[in-house]
Amino acid sequence: MRRSSRIYLNDLNISKAGFLRVFLQNYSNALNYSIVRLWSTGKITNELAVKSFTDSIRERFDVTARLAQCVSKQAKEVILSQRKRSRRERRMPRFHRPVANLDSRFVTIEEFHGSFDMCLKFSSGIPKMVVPFNWMKHTNKFRENGWILGKSVRLGHNENGLFIDLIFEKERPSKRTEGKVIGIDRGFRSMLYTSDGQDIGAELKDKIKVAGKRRKSYQHFITTEENRLLKQLNLTGVKTIVMENLKHVKRGKRGKFSRRANRLLSFWHYAKVGTRLEQICEEQEVSIQYKNPWKTSQRCPECGNIDRGNRNAKKFLCLVCGHADDADHIGAGNLEALGLAGVYSLRSLPTAKWRNGMNVHEIHNYAMRYL
Image (cartoon, rainbow, N blue to C red):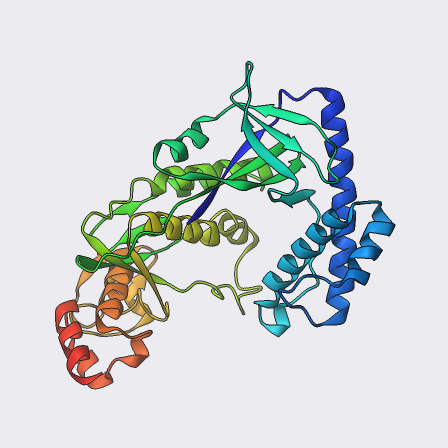
């Protein structure tokens, strides 16, 4: 497992900060140049760049051969991450924020004998200097919980100033083999709703409504609140959580929502919440399964009736048997059922048997026998 902790270099003197900003701007230009050239070839591998390519970077941007190799490696990583998308979604990436990935050839992390805790020593094409810094509260959490400080750092700057990202590593624990399976519904009115009744982030919607016009500062506030609320999720005795696959949830929905609804939806960071939840599960030895969200909040768990009329906003009322519940709880329960059955979608379950209605344990037993 790898995690990063960001430390801003606010105590760095003006001259050192100026040298690092100039270096990062030149590095960013070299990186974008490399991305354009590599993208045009159409053939990207994980092998080291050929000498002729690194020589062109070195001569054009006046960097060392070692740093040119580092630039080409980062450019390949950026392009390969883009190639994971479908052909229709692929776009040549552009690197707008100056950030350099530096390994032990360019930087060493040592204890600082003075008023600071640690320091970085740069070399090999980076302005030679010593950059001191102090441990932060977030960084100390990793140090106190058995995480090992890596030898690589990310150096960059943004609107808040120069920063370094320290990389911490820890052996990935094995997944739990015993425990229960729960479903988690990610919705608009509650950030997370679990099949065992946990309602996480219900108060976030009211905070989003207060936001007014969309602002970057408020986006950061909502992200902070989401991370805080995720800590309330109780995974004691859970071996697997089952969630909706929301990767393409907005595809084909253009023009179907009002401007106000689109603004409110933009504050729900499904991808960020999902990534952070994956990290929490990885640390707590919990597995994650993703299922098709089709009709999961419209299917009655009592009689098996699937009808869009069963759901009205956050209320669920079955038109056949009259079963009433919270719509998000219904969705989480159906996701749990899919996890126990070991299938991806409600379509994978037998229609005739499904209409008669089965609880989650009956679904599991049926799936083990027939599927």
